[in-house]
Length: 251
Ligand code: NAD
Image (cartoon, rainbow, N blue to C red; front, side, top):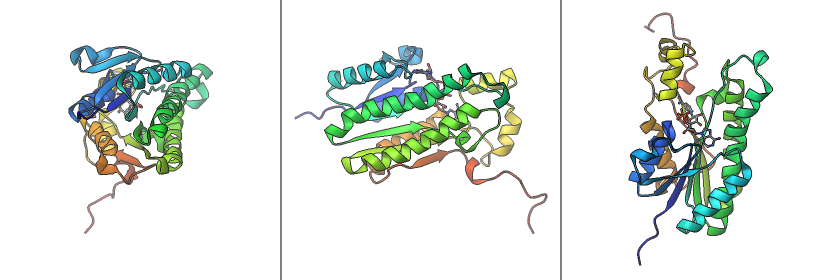
């Protein structure tokens, strides 16, 4: 009997970090579907399938996930990666900006997690990884982003606890600053300062998207079979250093 190829959905998997996650899961042997607004980079690697999806559309999420599960005989892995940012001071944020981020980064994650769970629970197993961020601990100028990324950690631990006995593992990866096109645009636009960021990162370098993908690959593998509800920080030590160096080297 030939073994069924496991199916993995990566939301926002057509570009940025999601693209590296899609390629990594493909190399790990999964059938990979990038569920994204746009086909993005999927033309570069036809083995990564694209399904058009706006994660903020709850009905569309169910329809697309049901279709994928039916077409490929089940759904084994979901990576909730689609996410957006709006940089603005709290007092200047518009309701539209706040709502846009909450809709993608929180409501979208919930819709996809619920739709995936509805397939994985009756099947008796599955793995979900939600992409949070070091911004979850609070980050000036990023109120909706930080708030939603913190909420994703809460949803991860709750779903991890709720579904553990039924074989569905839910964990999160919280990346630090990742060297992506969007990040480079922020540097060029002057919203981000590379020097200031590097000063705050103990490893003194940005993360590569492949390093985030490696953590996702681990969490969805059997190597992580007893991990549930956890958030794994891939941040070069950012979260464990509060960032005020000694004035001189200790004696
Ligand atoms: P990106 O903007 O490069 O790519 C995001 C992808 O998501 C795009 O392909 C986009 O089309 C898709 N997308 C956006 N809205 C969508 C929607 N409504 N429905 C479906 N797809 C949608 O972003 P990135 O930098 O690769 O970030 C990926 C994830 O990693 C996000 O959740 C982000 O918050 C998180 N993250 C990024 C960094 C970083 O430094 N880049 C750091 C920490 C966490």
